Amino acid sequence: MLGRTRCLKLGLIVMVLCFGSPSRVMAETPREQLQGTIDRVIEVLQTIRSAEDIEKNKGLLRKILSARFDFTEMARRSLGNRWNDLNEKEGEFVLAFTEFIERAYFGRLGSYQGEKIVYGRERVNRGLAEVNTEVVGGRGDAIGIDYRLHLMNGEWKVYDIVIEHVSVVSNYRSQFRRILQTASLEELLRKLREKGSPDQS
Image (cartoon, rainbow, N blue to C red; front, side, top):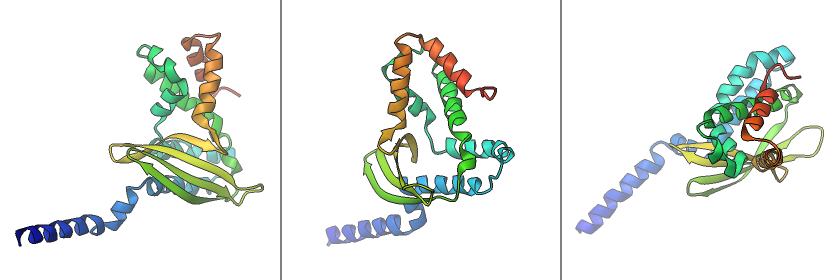
């Protein structure tokens, strides 16, 4: 009798945890968290009509993306086994890397033409996840974009993006490896700063 009563109590607790606040449970999935971020980005993109609009919204977009993207992990994976050679310059490298990415992609924001995001499969394995999406509605074929995330303090953070089967992190790692064959880490850091500078054309 005691065992049955205990099982009933445990069952009630599980029901409360699972169904008592469904929106919170759903929002904890990688897809839900990612979709919330992408929806906010699209809302901003829909207001952009000129270069002035891009400049005006950079700060907001940076705030939205930094809450979902783990640029430190992205930078670490892109640098590979040379990360440990930075000698306390990790923060400098992450900042230069982040500004480099912003410079590379922010200039393309004005090309948004109302494309939609279609969400596909979500795979979760402990603290790692992958969410498959497609960008549809543009002038060409649908573009497959997969987001790789890891769990940090209850938040799913993007550490890599795979565009049409090409990993952004792997691409940068190959580029950095080629540069470091003939250059030092300090020179790579300088190149990233130059590429990320707003004064660069």
